[in-house]
Length: 324
Image 1: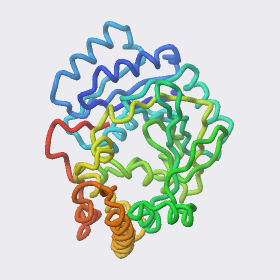
Image 2: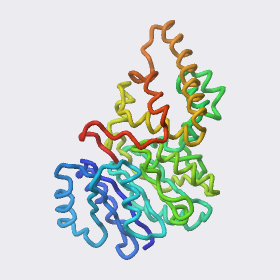
Image 3: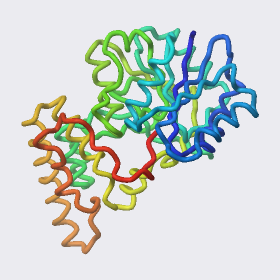
Image 4: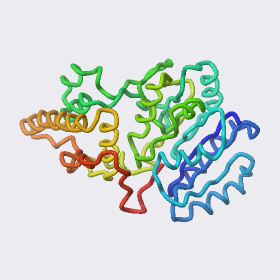
């Protein structure tokens, strides 16, 4: 099999159906397969998806895999990737619409660039406005930038600022969003599957970092375009945007990432860098009578799991949390 496309569903069956409809004209059932993993939704997702597969005659290229547990983003994707052997795997969020020609374009990039272990398309809004989806590594200095939220500091330390502006030509970021990413089979053979110690978030940067450490490049390929309806498959981004307190696994994943790549002492240094930056922002907010730019309780939540940062992930407290 040339390409296996892995889609995770958690209580978003109608988004999944829209995504599959966008894929249908691009699928060659002799070379492509979709592995649709239901992350133990506990609602009527499975019968809805089964009926859609039947009604739209997708059985030749869609396999529905019900998971007995909701192990998170990494676990769900790993389950899909382990289900079949393919030359490459495309991880695709349920809240995406694949633009015409995107699959062929990504496969073309895979063939043209054997050095690229991971390839990402341009993510965009339905009106074709591009989204920032390529990044530099999160680091202690990037956390200082985030905490300070001050233009001058961001400009001075721009080499450490995480977001990379949208570009119209291919380039090699340090990591890319896993809302849609193509992974070469050889990468999985060399570094293994995704780290299931992350429930959600920081799992994509972790995998890109491991791949790049092994000598592979991450390639952004803007010729392929995918609509990403941000927030459709989870609530954390909307909570952060509204400055509400996000789910605890966001901070648990953050702690895991920094402890894994910078050591436990590096995690502490990172947190103090963020707090130093936050002090600068707090003074500006006090002088200008501005609202805080941080989420509720963020000062204390960044210490989530700091004693045992590499322990098993914190699962959602509510079955209503979406995971994809």
